[in-house]
Length: 104
Image 1 (cartoon, helix red, strand yellow):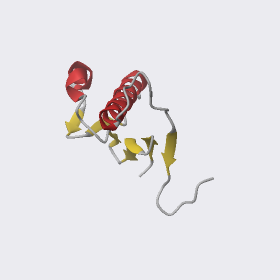
Image 2 (image 1 turned 90 degrees about the vertical axis):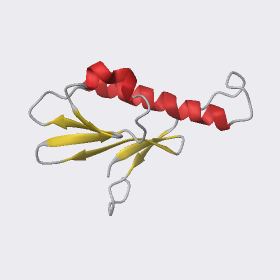
Image 3 (image 1 turned 45 degrees about the horizontal axis):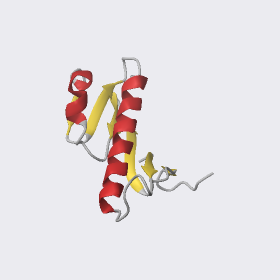
Image 4 (image 1 turned 180 degrees about the horizontal axis):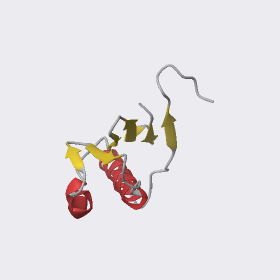
């Protein structure tokens, strides 16, 4: 399944189906903060389903990615012995590759 990792931690994954495409957020802890924005989409734990017959909600997906990245950074700060101000995390995004395909 194609997706992204941030500093080695799962960030977002994507999948396409006959009637919808899905965003797998790897954590649903922020869904409550987007309750109004997500009310028109089918949800299940960490999955949001977007219908194929509607425009892609680019701004919403961008907000989800930023909230998820923020969650990854918070998790790293909790695990770090150094204060966040002295040792801010460095963002690196790695692309997850489709199974059976080599990176290009």
